[in-house]
Image (cartoon, rainbow, N blue to C red):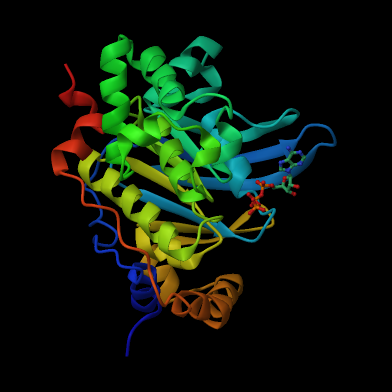
Length: 320
Ligand SMILES: Nc1ncnc2c1ncn2[C@@H]1O[C@H](COP(=O)(O)OP(=O)(O)OP(=O)(O)O)[C@@H](O)[C@H]1O
């Protein structure tokens, strides 16, 4: 008999994708990102929204956060990125990036860290791009500011990034405007922008939610590629247990601001200890299965990128 995690993995891999599942747990390493009992409150009324989140992210590790809408997943990510909405604040606990407590960072240090150490991709990629500028120009700006490249080198780097995120015709996409691209292509562009400055940590908050299942699986493969080839550490926020099963080493299950269950993904999926986790799994089995099985005619997968293409744009140490 197959386990829940085996079934979820099988379904998430169905749409014609072939990369392996979560990597073996990395050995002991200094956490790139460490949250300790983080509490977040709405300063306007003093209401505590997130009641203590802890996890460590080491190179190549993927931590998943699942849970119902409004449970505090996005606020937790935004706290780690130093971009909590106005009047929200971290009221207790600590967040460290590379051993530095982010509460001590100056705005200038934050600017240096964002992109270069920690990057993020959210849902609704179109809203993060300027509709009146070509894709290449927008990415080039990131590359020129964060990597200090000249015009020509920036163009080459942007094309390499577009290829690295498996966009078929990088030259064409380079010269297109956002409205000319599909949702899946825009999400790839956003991922390219997020990894342009070789971050060590990428936070993907519902980054595949708006995409159809085939494209979703391709984006998940892309994230797995970045993890495998560049040791990128990921925080993946999703409503979808199949996404979590596909990518994550560890999962946190959140409900109403509380982490109700946390542990290695397979243990949580195969032996859930909290009633809410069991509910999520049974809902997934009832509705998720059909959604994946509906996938009868997957689109052609993107052309395989040469390993060198994938490594060159994102491995920080390889660039002179
Ligand atoms: N900018 C904001 N202004 C006011 N309230 C907010 C804001 N952002 C979040 N909240 C509130 O904080 C709580 C947690 O929100 P959060 O976005 O972290 O949830 P979530 O788990 O990411 O939900 P979803 O899955 O729907 O994105 C919710 O009750 C939400 O209404």
